[in-house]
Image 1 (cartoon, rainbow, N blue to C red):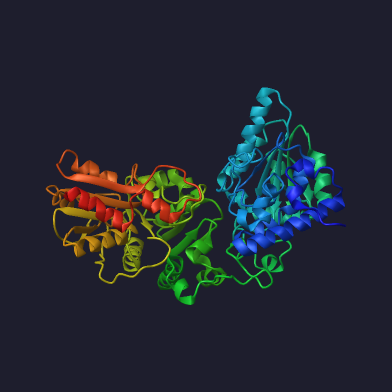
Image 2 (cartoon, rainbow, N blue to C red):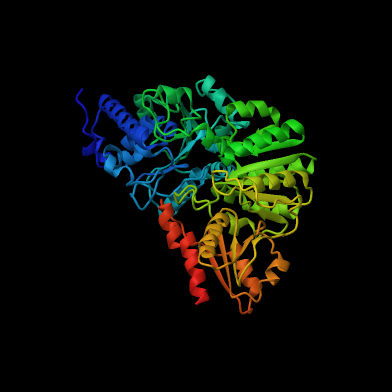
Length: 590
């Protein structure tokens, strides 16, 4: 069979005249092209390789975009993008960055939502189906959700409502037996039983909820998928189509190392080895590695200390070996952030010392649990936030710089911003011992910077700012990772003979009024934080000074959904370089 010119495929209409053999050829060429890009560029590898046949079959059978497909998380939609008009972003290296890694309505009418968080597709699709019914229309509505996403509470809520529609509603469950790491939770025993019995086992969760149920044992077989999707097309009641797929399909090293190849940077296509791997020294300076080593020591010393993740153990530095070393003291509640917090609250109530690690972007899924079940009930849970930074993930679905405004204003929840490795460790040591309230510790960036000169405390329960330098009538207050930038600005000014007061606030929830009182007669106070200005730490300081003559400048990030921004450009746009901060001081002094 001759090769298919992928650049001639501009929409699903271009594949609907193909036969099964041609569709298999298409899938093979999509896989080969995708591997070429992923090995050179990086991205989500396993999820996309495992979904190529299913995505081709969906677009072949259903009349998209009239028929609507909502992809959960949407990190498995590279093949979807390839056959919906964006092929050049995968065939031409000069255009590799033309598209995002997730569905995006700004790119295509085939993308219904910008989705980078998990478990929401079923509820979103149920809303679309209800809207269709209310308008008297007839198109198919399909939600595509992975087995890992089923652990999220909103997935259950969506399934619960979707079962009541009484009309066309198709849920495709892509079961590859994996989340980012291994699956955790009781639902996976049910899925395993269904796989082992070719879909015939009872009880069946989906039938129990009110769905018709179909099963495809070879979920990477094109013919089986097409036949199944044709059988449910235009169906007039809710149905779950359960497909058993292979994560990493077609790349042996990804098939055998599913966790490592969920997402990866550029790699050698033959061996799977990273092209730009971190050195052992760089790994040891990473906050994830530092946190994991610190927690393993704590758990070894005290069996009442536990570490909790909501399906992202790698972010916490807990690879498979470390998880095994921690044993039952390492808890993965699966991708269910709300449950992670409530489990931690229950553990704390029961006398255990829980430490929960979160990706900053994901913690916003559980605001109510932070507020009600930890803060209101004064449960001593420690939360460690990773990637809470403008220098973290920069896709609009994974922004991590909203956390300060989000959490620092909850009563009885202490938000701490260490500036360096030593302060991070001291805050973690204290928070695990204290029994008064919930504590959030924000890792200052990804690499652990050492500063032995910083003054650490034995007790962080009350706000105690550190005045690192005293001088002049200008104060620079740098929160967390911004402290280093403020220090550099102070150094620039010192070379010009301008001495400033440099302050590390440590605590972003409460103000050290004694220290701030000493600044009332200052000419200028500048705050800088690695988060949005609105509702952030700096505005607390500005409010404190009120009508005092001191001028207050708050530096931080705009309240916007930024998408794939350039880090250096954003830093300059926000006036957050040391040179710009120094110039702000010069201008004020004039």
